[in-house]
Image (tube, rainbow, N blue to C red; front, side, top):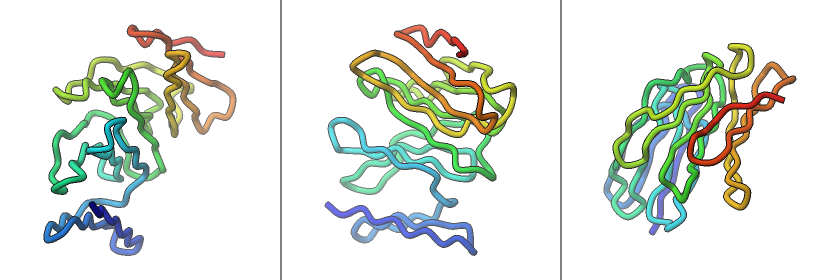
Length: 150
């Protein structure tokens, strides 16, 4: 199975190519494969995160609500791929239910500045985020995604 991504910076477009399927989207800011390897989570500069099927190139779900138009914002999967988490240009951390695509948590972080990256450590059931403020690290624990700032 081949899933190729071509990024064209000047045209601000990317193409997903899987066999005969072509799909134009905005520039990609992050990509993460699901644990089972059957899909990829793709963040783009149109403030949309897409879950794409690797087998046929179709979009399985999309996640919206955050802002991602100018910066490289990374998103990730967590909780055994049950939750999608992303930073946002509005300084908030968003969490969506993977299957339903609904926002399940929205947390203020990084003094309202860009929250550019999120990561999940399965062994510790811990979330972390990084922002352009350079001073704070948001850490989220367990099922409740409770926010603590260090």
